[in-house]
Length: 293
Image 1: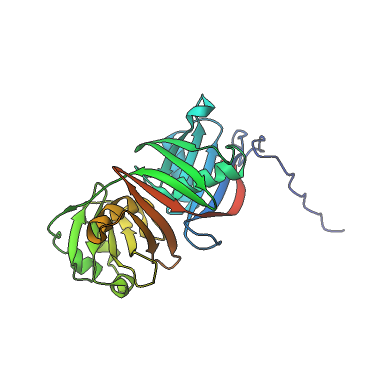
Image 2: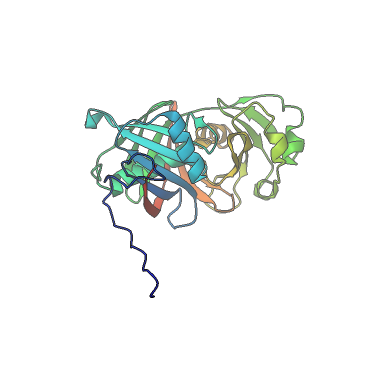
């Protein structure tokens, strides 16, 4: 007897009703897109998942999706009733919701333009836990308008230098993070944190920074947030809301080219504008799929 041939799956358009999963009720599929942000090439920068919701979903479900994606951030977009009023935007790490995320906002704007949900000349408007954020196209780049989160000088918490394996030149604290200044780029690249010890500090994470060695790069940084499920974030837009004001004091300028020197790496344009910071970056879509749960 010939072996039976398995049925091929039937393609469904995005938004179609999916078959039941394990005896559960039928569910509505919705698009989910993986985007590499703050890079112009796939597999660089910082990956974010962007989930465009047809209806509001609860935070517990969003957290489970973010855990499933297992990226530093998963963004959830819901159109507001008045389309011209933009989108609700929330960000989740694998273990909790966060108040501000740059790379997943960049990725979200990129997806809205790429899918035609916004025209190319429209400004993306996001209503978030950090207020209204916007994104606009600037040629091949996307520019985010974010609130500045400047640091204040503090005494280094006991054990912070040891946890990073460094001797800080300066320690500051912003609304979210500790900022640690090091002597040069080689010192930043050489940091090997003890992530278990870093989890104990009362902050979202720790950024380390120095002047850049490469011509045309004003400063470099790395960012560690193990308490939020992210040992090292590849490229972090929100930390540059603090790094921009910090390096403005050091270098007496308002516009910078910044490089985050993680293994994946990424480049940002940073411009101070009063109490706001404009963050420029590029983005590349690497995967499109359907969320069935």
